[in-house]
Length: 269
Image (cartoon, rainbow, N blue to C red; front, side):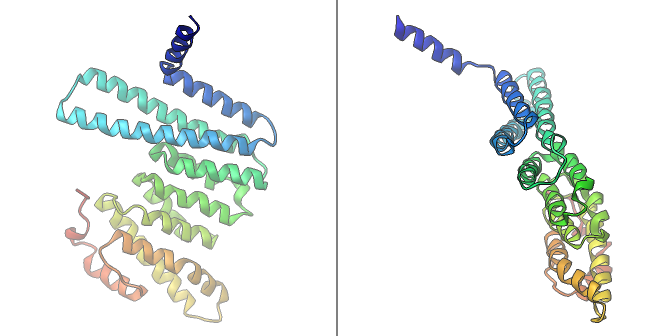
């Protein structure tokens, strides 16, 4: 009798509704953030949200393939797709609570925000918008390295619609943020041709501008800026084109000769 009850109990656990499990996880996470000094307890929950988001993303790709191949019930597949997309948004919304529940910059809060930023970077377009919101927060005005961290995570989302957002940061007033924007763009090598062309055009122009300004060695501010941003800018250009130049002038010449050649700006297959 006892054995049968244990087996029945185990069966109930195994058949638990995943949606209910997620709700419990979300509620526990928000409860932790409602308290003070429990930031480190929230991070494992964030990790679980990331893993769930990745699993959903894999399932969504499989559904897309099945729909394209006309396998299975299109109605059921579309229904499941809608449910998963809704959950993906919920997961990103939930991770974002880390930023709204904590405002003051402290070491525990920074650990929480960085964990949340990394998570959002793994959540595609659902995370990208929140990362943009994060780096624009006034709280990071005196913490440029942490703002730069938020910017760099945008690249991992592979949300190519954020190309203009990153280009606009190439003349930001904090050098490390410029470098971070370039690092993010380096992750966009799979972007559509027009997007890569747009990014390369602006990267080439800003690289030449910063190089020219730094040619005056007495202008220590410009020299320091160029020292900080040169490597990431060049790395981004190498990632977005088939070329591997190191000097700004070489990039300018190449751009002028090839900016309108379609073979360099084809969409990825």
